Length: 174
Image 1 (tube, one colour):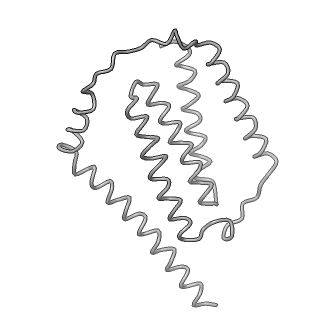
Image 2 (cartoon, helix red, strand yellow; image 1 turned 60 degrees about the horizontal axis):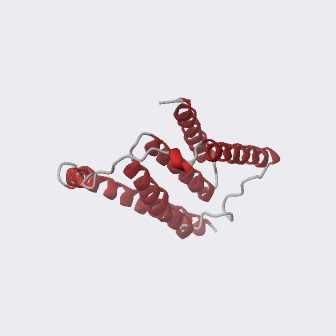
Image 3 (cartoon, one colour; image 1 turned 180 degrees about the horizontal axis):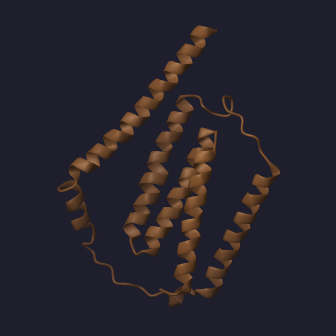
């Protein structure tokens, strides 16, 4: 792979790490969920760069799309928005966000100017590429697939129970 791929690999890796750190340091759950979406997009870009286009698309559709909608729904259900946790806005955060946005825009402009669409190599697509993956997922790895879905459901139910329990305890003290 050339320097183009190396630079972008390190860029998306750094974006994923920085967004993950920002996610775990946020006190506002909605802001943390949005940073997690950023991590998912960076991981999807890494999958696409490694040639796993299907995994990149699934990463965006399933994780950044569906599961994050469920998390945001739970956050809103538990009423953990701006009323409960106030996060101070600082000039440094706005400056950092502006710098990152400018760098990404400059990179996008560089990529568009340096890579004409006609020079992109087109690889032949195997029409039956999804069948072995689906067969493996729903035969050999079915238990792991189902355990993951049950684990996510238990995490959501546990979050609701814990939040409602502390909410009832606060109301009882009042």
